[in-house]
Image: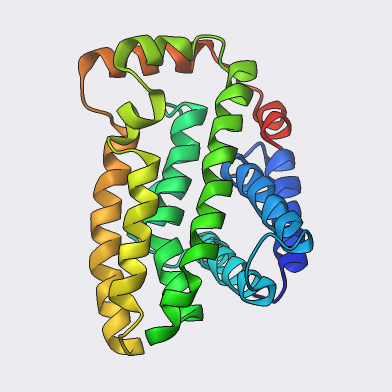
Length: 249
């Protein structure tokens, strides 16, 4: 069942994380990160940090339900969308490092879901009024990513190799900056907000294919130095999935 409140989103994520720990599933990595983001958004709502708290909760719930629905579809053997399918399938592979698993989820959720959710809860001319709160949730996402870098050091002692191999880790593997991705999400919302449901879905399908191309770059980054460094990190980082989920949580 879809979530209707931000508390229900957190409950769904708690269930996902508990199941992932027991099953030793890497699907729990992004769920743990996303739970932290959701809690920060909830704290911001309670603190009055947003212009429209009720609207922000609707955005958060719509945003989260896209991820939760995609994961449920994947578990049922249905099509969750191309970029989410790539992200979920990677969790079954041995070679991606923890950072890649996180970036695959971030890629699908920011580059696809965020703009879609914004357009759906603030259609047409309503979208302009959402901009400040939209930027605020982006600030939360950015701050959480900085925290993730620190946490990854606890499970991947050699993560610094990626920095030395190619500058900022997330930018090198993802091949675009998170800041630009969040700006692009707003442009997606602007493109989708005036459209009817059928036209919107066509645009979403096109965007999904582009985001899936980025997912391929994340999973198989270009450049021999980055690939070798990533492989080294994979062999030296912790293999205890439950422990990694706990660190990320």
